[in-house]
Every structure is written in structure tokens, then in C-alpha cells.
Image (cartoon, rainbow, N blue to C red; front, side, top):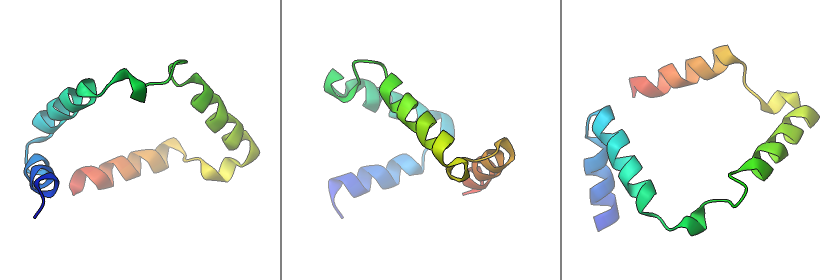
Length: 74
């Protein structure tokens, strides 16, 4: 098993709060090159236009809640 697979397996065994803390530390360790100069505004506008053009690609709040609940059960 590769080191990445080992680390991922161990990380996924951590309690949720520890996984969240680890994720924050890892994300903060990445160089700024992975952030967008506009803070993601262009991407947000693109997604908004996509949703306007095809509302079927979106989720209702109830659908989103169901997906979150389903994911938490795993």
C-alpha cells in the first residue's frame, strides 16, 4: 500500500472533528497558487449562469439535506 493510501486510510478512521482539523491544516499548507485572485467570484458567476440555463442541475434544500444525512451515516 502506498504512503498516500495509508495516510488516507488512517485519516478516515479519525473522529469527524479531528478529520476537519487535519483538513484545515493540510489546506493551509498549500501554496497560494491554488487560490483564485477573485476569491472564486468568477467560478460562482459561472455556476450561477449554469444553474439559470439549466435549473435541473441544481438541488433543492431537502435534496441537499438528504445527501448530507446519507453521507454522515457512512
